[in-house]
Length: 337
Image 1 (spheres, rainbow, N blue to C red):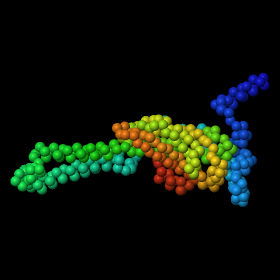
Image 2 (cartoon, rainbow, N blue to C red):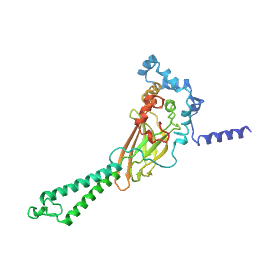
Image 3 (cartoon, rainbow, N blue to C red):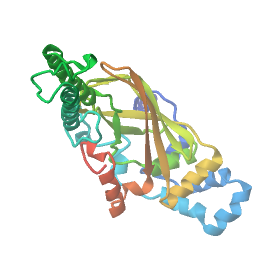
Image 4 (tube, helix red, strand yellow):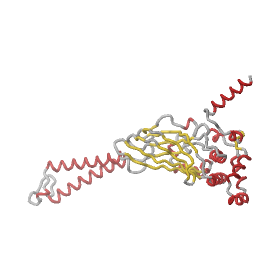
């Protein structure tokens, strides 16, 4: 009976961990989702360089880090283990988006205005030349006062006006369909930065974390994207990566994606500084992607997307609200992310 019970428990544990071996120290260090104080303290002391020990002891940095990381996680932080955002905040299919347009390229108003401007400018130039060199009456040509090279017969005159109209239309179409860079928004409703820091401190990189991004295609044509590897950095040092698959984004639509993040350990000094920054609510991470895309009908292009994530962004403060208003969070299904 005991043998069968042991086999059953082993199978359950293997299923829960998808067959992966997980360091026992990780489970022993967690109590109801909270890092054990002594474990964090011991790990910090092991990592701490000798030249830092006096400063950290005098300023009580170690105890402050331990107290911060052992704080009970919020419900939103706990939910983050199974998803970057609640299901209701993630689009399952692309959705049309016709928000306020920024810039000249792709703007319907600018396309129409420039079409008319180019047409009228060219047409008035033709009329001016005709009247100046070929008499005052637009319907007749004074061959005596009009040099041969400026003689505009009726058919040529009409053809030239039509050409000016064609030029205006071409200009408008180019403005309307001119390729624009894709726009991304970081839409994770919660981000357990403390969990990430705590796991890295104890040396575990098997962290169940993902990132929720929203892609907006501002073009009037579909966009094709190559497979892209994104990076998460701390002060220029990469410690996390995520893969955005090859995809096609329909014109003027929003698409959501949730990507798993793979972590690697930072250097000891960087890891300790990250923990200190988090304990002081001053942690800043950078999400970066180099994107290769192609708008149908045009050549391939490249774009960069950089987003800074600050620990203070996830607090209900007036300053963070102001940041949201000026960012691309309007693309998120649940605004104010």
